Length: 216
Length: 313
Image 1 (cartoon, chains in turn orange, red):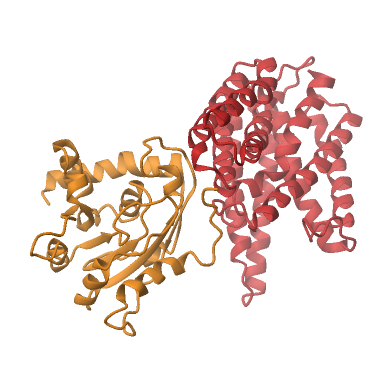
Image 2: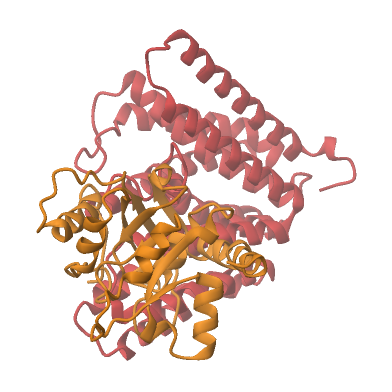
C-alpha cells in the first residue's frame, strides 16, 4: 500500500468515520483487548450493514489500519469506477469473485494476503441478508480456516448496525451499537467437516448472554 | 456571570460540589486501603464518572446559555438514542424515527429563543401530530399504537422533560437574583442527585418496609421518607443562596424534587423491568446508561420549572 494512499485512508477514518461512529451512532465495544494487532489473522463477524466493515476497521489502531483487509465481493464493490476507487483506497478491500465458475479458488487473494501477514475481515454469511438475523455461514470460511491452521481466528458479534443502516435503505438512523469481540478460537477439537458450523457457533455464542432488541 | 464572580453563589455552589467530590474520592481511597481484599472497582468507576459529569456541568454553567442549550440538547440526543436502542422498534418506522430525532434541535431552539409557548406545546401538540401521521403513512397498522406510543413516551421523557433543565437558564424572573438561572439549574441538579444518594443511604441504614418490590426491590419507605426529609432541609438551606425562593418555597421545592425524583427513578426501573434489562446501557462506567443517571431528572425538571415559573416567573 503506497504511503499517500495510506495517509488518505488514515485521514478518512480519523476525521470522518470515527467521529460519525462515535457521535451519531455510539459504539459499545466489549473485548476490544482481544482484537489482533498483527497478522496473519482472520476476523469473522456477522453481517447486516455496510457499516459493519467501517466499524470493525475503526476499532484498529490507525498505525495498523493499512494491514486490515476486508474481503468483499468484486461484482458489487467494483461495479463503477468511483466505487472501485473508494473500495480500494479508503477500505483497502480484497475483491473476490462470487460467481464461482472459474477454475481457481475464489479465495486465492485471501491466502496471498495472509502470507503477507495481513489481518483479514471476513463476513462468512456472504451477504448482508435480513437485518439483525444471522444467515447460515457459507462453507468458504471453513475451508479457509482449515487450510491455514497457524492463522488465528477472532469471532465478532455486532448488533444494531443493521438497524442504523440496513440493506436497501440509504438513510442512516442513529442507534447505539454493540460490538462483542471474542478471544481467538480454539480450533484443536474441530473435525474436518464441521469447521464452518463451529465457527458459526462461535459468533452466535458471543451474543448468548445479552439482550438485543431486534425489529418487531 | 457577573463582574465579580466571587460574589456569585453559583461559583460557591460549584466549589462546594467539587468539595463533596473530593470527600467522596478520599472515602473510596480509604475503603480501598482498609479492605484491599474487597472489589471496589464499580465504586471507583462511579466516582470517576461523577468527576466527569460535574466538570461538564460546571463548564456549561460558567459558559452560559448557548453552551448549556447545546450541552443539554446533546444529552437529550444521547438519552433518546439510548431509549430507541432498548425498545423494540419496527423496521418500517425507520423514517419516523429519523424525523423524531429532528425534534431535538427544534425543541432546544425554542429554549434558546426563550419562546415559552412553543417550548411547552411543540412536542405534545405538533410532534405528536406529525409523528403519528408519519407512522400511519408507512401503511403498517400492525403494532401501530405500540410504535406510536413508545416513540411519544421516549420523546416526552428524554427530550421534552429534559429540555426543561435548559429552560431554567433562560427563564425570566420577576425579581432577578445574583445566581440567576444558573443558580436555579444548579439547585435542581444538585438536589436531585443529592436526593438519590440520601434515599440510598437511608434505605441502607434503616430500610425495612418495601414500597413496590416488584418494580424496585431496594426502595423502602424508610429510605424514601428519610430522603424526602433530608432533601427538604437541604433545599431550605440552599434556596436563599441559589434561588429567589422564600424559605417555605425552598422547603416545598425540596420536597417536590425528592418525591418526583423517586417517581422518576422507579418509572425508569419499570421500563427496564418490562424490557428485561438491568441497565439502560453501559455508557457511564459505574452508573449504567444515560437513562440510569437521568431517571430522576426526567420527572423533576418539568415540575420544578413550572413550580418556579408559577411563583417567581
